[in-house]
Image (cartoon, rainbow, N blue to C red; front, side, top):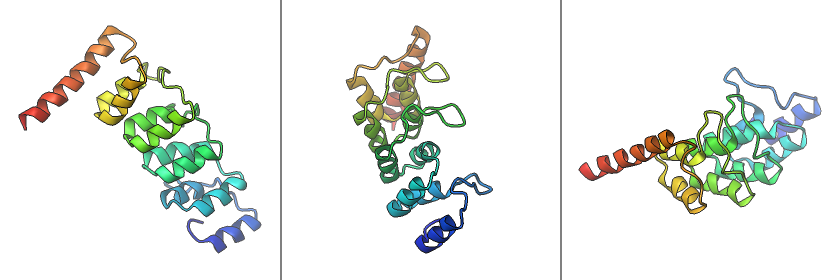
Length: 167
């Protein structure tokens, strides 16, 4: 279904399932997000494609344009994917500052503790995404929910800094 507008229109007219997954678990909407195919993304959303699943997948794939479109079209910032991770948690793990800033502008909750009991700042620090960490620090986000978590996060940053300096 991906990429060929005529084929997609034909399949939709034939009542094809726009949320059907490939063996790899990819939906037509996700495939079009990979290609930043704005026209087909819009067409599939209008036919009932699962916007939130595509949103979580798009953030993991660094598809900034697709994330922007999906958020504009009503993607739910509080949605948690099949692994229980929120959109913001995925953005912190995958490190695209452009993707991360979009939901901030839309009022995403950055103070929420994730399913593993960690703040987003702790996640971004562990993953080594300095721009995201800096963005969260400037918003006044807590580093951790406990002294132990804070120590681990700060130790991670210190170790990273020390390794950079030794190079």
